[in-house]
Image 1: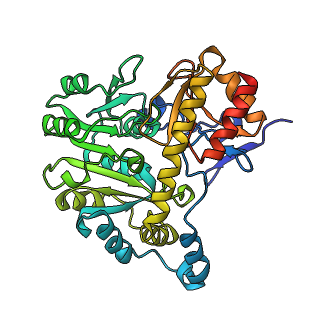
Image 2: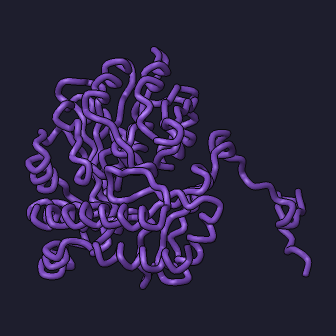
Image 3: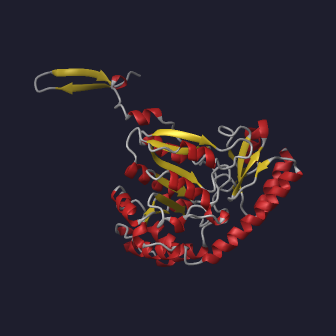
Length: 372
């Protein structure tokens, strides 16, 4: 069948006749043309053991679900979000001023806000490699000049000296995940202080998505360093990844600029409500962290028994060195209902395994032993 014709008419005559196949699409910005598309493998994950996305593997806190079921009304869903109560409760929980944080649509929006506020096209952004894909995604989208510093070979230790050496007066933003995804390795607060001090002309954002598992934070330092930003998320320990809620922290003057660059309703009402309810019961967090840390040791023991190398982690996941069979192992486990994340495209031979409960890790080890 031929493509339908498009007729463009003037007042007196046909000016142009083109088929739809001949029409030209609009040309996007050069930064969009250059950047890589990001396609996370999120399809078909229900009813499987999800050890692939570093989520809370037991689900959201029961008191959050109960609150939403009991108290959310039709009226709540019919009005635009209001954040005052959430900001009050969260600032109290995190020990900051209300004007020192903003709610974000997950950590992704926190990264985007930093770019929107501080980065012009061709400004220099420093990233570590490998790390969370969205750092590079939003840097590319902003048209930034990206400089990458590799985690140290073999150990994948934090490259402090190498990063300090690359910071110059031209550096506009530095993005750090601590502990880092996907390596699981991290650094101490004093190292972050060195970076922030050296990058005095740059916004330094420390993504603390896995803080509860490492216990290392620089959030109390935002009042000492005017260029320090810290992000937290409710997607990991709080089991609320579907809600897409997080926080970005910095000094009040910085946050005033950041909020100017933020959509006024980027976080939905349910997410804001769930976040303020979630932090009211820390017993859930403490119990889950203890379970994960215990299960992580169980995973180490099992991998040692199978003689499979791994990188010691400070987070709720472990990078496993599966060698040439990495993708095969991932696929075989998926066929058995266990999901892990292939990272061999950036770390040859590696898969990343989320640490859940001891029972879940034991199931993973049992299935792995069958195919190893």
